[in-house]
Amino acid sequence: MKNYELVYVVKPNSDDETKESVLNKIKDVISSNGEVEKVDAWGNRKLAYPIAKFTEGFYVLVNFKAGVEIPKELDRNLKINENVIRHMIVVA
Image (cartoon, rainbow, N blue to C red; front, side, top):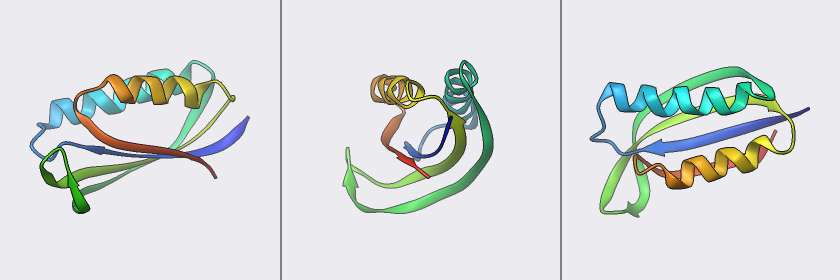
């Protein structure tokens, strides 16, 4: 298993339940063949440039260990989630 970092940005006008549901979905995908090591919610931050007419976003950093197929599945899930405006997965 490799160490990964996932940073994703949720729409700033999302309620707490929506933010929690996105995080729970991510944890479910990772737990199928890996483990979540740390979740760090950075809160609302200004974006470097407007994305979908938003100038702010709610940032979350997730550190996890997983097999090589998990990042692909996470990428697929985050792309179809309308509450996530950006995400990035890197090998730590």
